[in-house]
Length: 220
Image 1 (cartoon, rainbow, N blue to C red):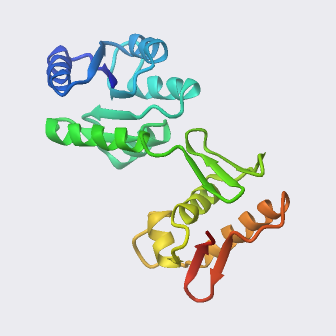
Image 2: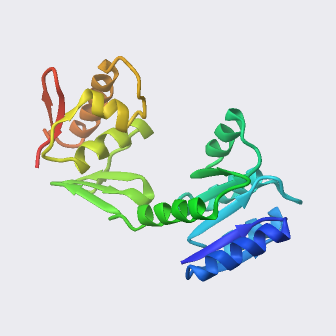
């Protein structure tokens, strides 16, 4: 696996390069934002470790520009910036993860492994005539694309991945919405109605069954 390190502090770049090469990774190093962006596009790394404060182009600018070319390669910000707003800004720019300097190399290594495991997950998920291509964020019904919003896509994919199992509304709110406090789960029904309308506009199907008072189940 190939990792691109975009870091202008030579000591940190060398430390990361040596440590990750010992773990068997192929390492490319760029010392400024413009070189980092060029290397990211040309070298097609499997993962990018990106500093925020960089000469020529900031890490944020690199992330935004790279995401116009590539939406799937994981990007981990390594930065001293740690306010909530800055974290949100980085994630909105397309970063997948965010580690504050100074950091533990062991933690970074585990984060990298997690992202590589996610990449290696089965890309195509199917339920009867319904097919998800996760790397392209697309879903098809009988080879016709179903245009879903981000939340609709995540909800339907979650149910399909858990096919044959009743998913309670509370589980869905926690796992799909990532909300871990009391919340009106009725919003799920609104999204499910929208999903069903879109599926039925292509073909009358009944893949998702409502379990009244409980939640939903994808029929196998």
